[in-house]
Image (cartoon, rainbow, N blue to C red; front, top):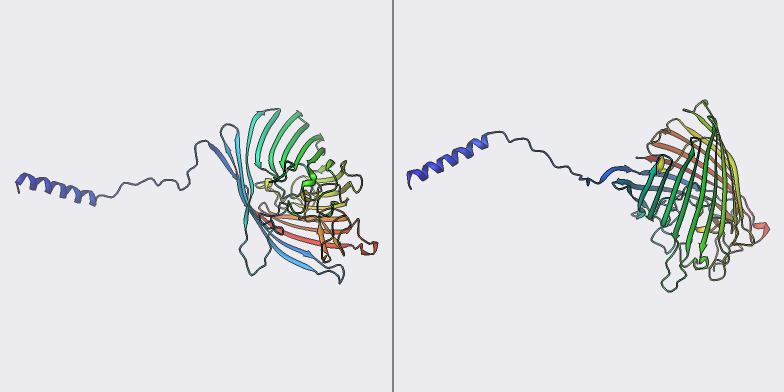
Length: 424
């Protein structure tokens, strides 16, 4: 081998050995999570709730129930350039009968079935565009599986109901002490394969909030809900979670639903109160509902006071609540056709010894508590926030059915729900 070749090989070997002996320069580790440059922020909206749901039997004809029920919701609202937001959330999903897609009114699961796996469903999947955002007004349009409609109680919409369709919001600051918000929703209730009569829900709402003095404010809301092709909402077509509406032998609704919802909230605030952190709110609430699509059993109303304020809602993640508590009472009278039963609160119920007189009787009826409408009674609530991220909430219902098959079957029953909620 020529000596020049040997010299080159020797230089290469020496250079390699020298390089190996030198410490390696520090390397910059790539991010494990890459966020596109057009994403400006991500707000997590997550919570875990553990519930004890007790339904004691009001007589030997009924069976007492005690369920341990977890709920998990994991999601985020992603803010992007060009005034866009995307909302995503997954939630534990319980089925209703044959409807394995999930209960539209509940995200509870139950400890049962030999520790079976618990299914998860899509709870939010929407995009929102806010082209109007000036000092005195904001306006947005959203489409998808949306957030719970605002400024309603569970007599109008269950707090877990996430409608599907489109919604528009316009919020206007009238002056430093008064603001108004307009909400419009166009929601799909079902899609029928062999009919053009798909049922739809339209929502219009005006909400006005006024601050009269440092210690006194009011909130007044007027809403109108209307269902198109309501008779297509049979018990066979959509999940049958609640009860109360009048139906024919085929399970079809016999009334229309053109529902007015009016409510008012008056709040007095004192600077401090023993055992409460910060300003202490004292509120009085009243609500009236009238379904102009039904000739009878079409009225609902509720009213009551509250002391203090503690919220379970996801929108309060990050809000300081530690040390705060709430004590509230509400009387309610909810007639069976005052609203569409499958959108109202599903924790609210009454005991029936036999099938409700306005529903087609099943082949066999077991005495039980039925949630929904056609009930009246009392709701008590005590909530406390030991931490900003942790809420303890106890609610007690004392209800009876309004319409029963026989007067001797009317009975007052109790339901107790104890919740522990961690927000993260």
